[in-house]
Image 1: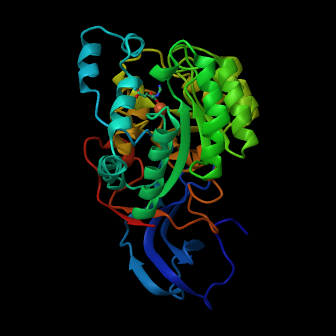
Image 2: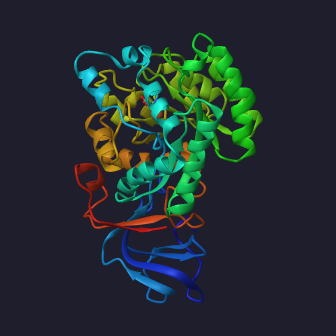
Image 3: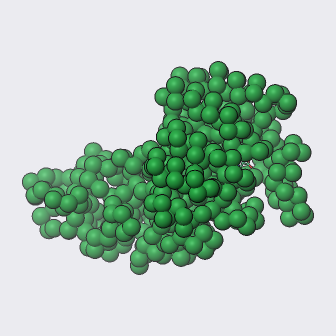
Length: 406
Ligand code: NIG
Ligand code: FE
């Protein structure tokens, strides 16, 4: 019996039944897993039936999809959604020739967002972040990863993570919170980078873990971020506290960070423009997801492409995400990111959709719960008024109509 075919269900009454839907299960390797004119039965928030639309199926509530396309809810698996201010002035500086690294070294970049975030109240951060979130939800996003990292002191990092938690309690959306204390060196620790890493490891991670404010820890491993050795120290501490790990790796240069995160069985290595073949092999060996971020590639006017074909050949799962943040990707459209993954990275529309469903779920360690339409998974679904799932990558600048079921 296949995953999608079921025992006789005629005697069961589901809580909810979505029928006459073209179902895109995303449950098969290298395939949309389409079931034409199918039905999905849901009970207690979980999928209990996926298959043919039989007239005998029964439910307390029935939804007639009328031939629309039912997909897993979209997952934005890498964002910096919460921050104060914006950095439009830096965009203008970059267009006049300054590089991202030069702006960061001159005290701008991430640190200018840190100043604005420290000044903002919890309510102000909540209000600005939820406005952004609403744009993502309007495009069928039902799960979002949110990183801290614009506090760089204990109080502000906790403030950001509390805002992330409150967003999850307020909106019908799943939040995956990530602690990114090692995002940049705060001004108070100028010339004392190791001292800051001690603070991250000795105070911040233990507090975040104790207060259960994050499920993962991330680091910006880069010349203008933190070294391989400092990153490894943070990974060891995170693991000791039962937190999962991921990494901003190989965005501006090859630091061998993807090898490190893979060897620590990390969830994902993200960005990866400067990824080496050796790191690809390590990622394949440890099933570490490659999270590709075409919005940052585009906005930084990067010319070095991530090694998509080599990742494909090595069978490394590829996720894609908005990387929404004020410095390198102020993008609030997951559909535009899917389109960019195809146009800029030459991914296929199927790979783009895998990148925001099943592979994004893997990048968050949530692939047993979400990311495909399969029996036992959470019923976090979106019904789209489209003619084929390819259309989600094709259209840009506007979203097809959709209805969320969460
Ligand atoms: O994913 N590169 C590090 N972090 C972010 C940028 C953060 C910022 O510039 O504010 C990124 O690109
Ligand atoms: Fe990022």
